[in-house]
Amino acid sequence: MEQQSKFPANEFGEQGPLELHWALKKFDQLTVVELYAILQLRSEVFVVEQNCPYQDADNKDQKSFHFMGWDGATLVAYTRIIPQGISYTEASIGRVVTNPKYRGTGAGKQLMKRSINNTFELFNCTTIKIGAQLYLKKFYEDLGFVQCSEHYLEDNIPHIEMLLSK
Image (cartoon, rainbow, N blue to C red; front, top):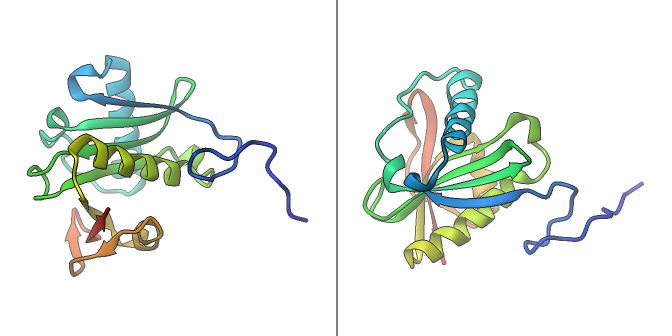
């Protein structure tokens, strides 16, 4: 039996009980608590869960915007929104991460849809380029991204570059 959600759809047409508080900040606007939560979540997923020791502090954070989805005091979802000319010629979205305890709730999809909108608005751009882990190709294709490179290894994990045009 299919259940209807008793919760109204958000502006992206998604239904569900997860209502996050979203915040977009420049690096120097982050509180110490927010920065710690960001670094902790990135380390939990990208270093520990994926068993991939890498240098996370790459000097791009200071030039980027940080988009966070909070459930109370818990950081649920995060992206780093990077201006043109830093990672690529195009604006970019990186360090896309969802708290493992919240996977399957739609938080990742909400995160990316909102991050895409923020990127287009912040930088008045028409194209976004990402470096995506290969296993997430379909997830990003469903958001409108198109593969634009061959597979490559980054920190021993297969990646592809993808573009989204407005």
